Image (tube, rainbow, N blue to C red; front, top):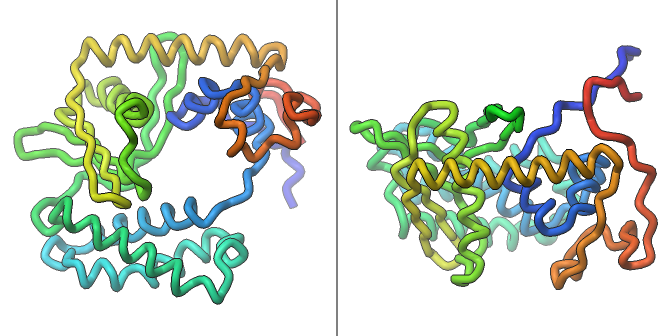
Length: 275
């Protein structure tokens, strides 16, 4: 076993971590700095499975991406997910597997009412993206799918296994897509022609066309969020922010707002070695 000191990965901003901080700074700390794992859920695992099925589907020749082949990929993809995530068998007990896979099957079948995957080839699926802004903010994430048309126009696609948001919640959904659009602007010098969210639970789509000026303004928003995170990171002063979302938080037992005590602050991740 290696005795070399472990170095924590350089901190970066992702869509989910930015959303965490905006919701509750202490939630951000628990997830991004303390890295306290939250209990996995069936819904999250189902989302992982459906994403894997679609990724495997686009790994096939276009002519083979018919509905029947996609549905046949579900069991194979489930085996892959279980092999990668040891907890999967605990989250979905053996007597629940049939129902769980049937739910995933319905979501995959719903995809075909929205797109015909035999008619195009994506540039990439589950693509890791990263860039560093001029002021040092590192942006990092994974894009479900990037399409590039013969004209060079870029489309960013994200699959959601839930339902489309109500109108008031649309800005939160588009936040993630603008984040990826900004990364592509900074890494490729191209403004995506379309951002597309596909909601499989109710067969809805949400599309948006950004422009360069808007993305530059969005970049300033991310810079402000990161500046606030770094200020809190210097002292460990990540204060809880109570809201109705607290009812769904996995960390209530550690939250001072609910009588809990957070673990000792480990310090801001950097180049220092940790055991």
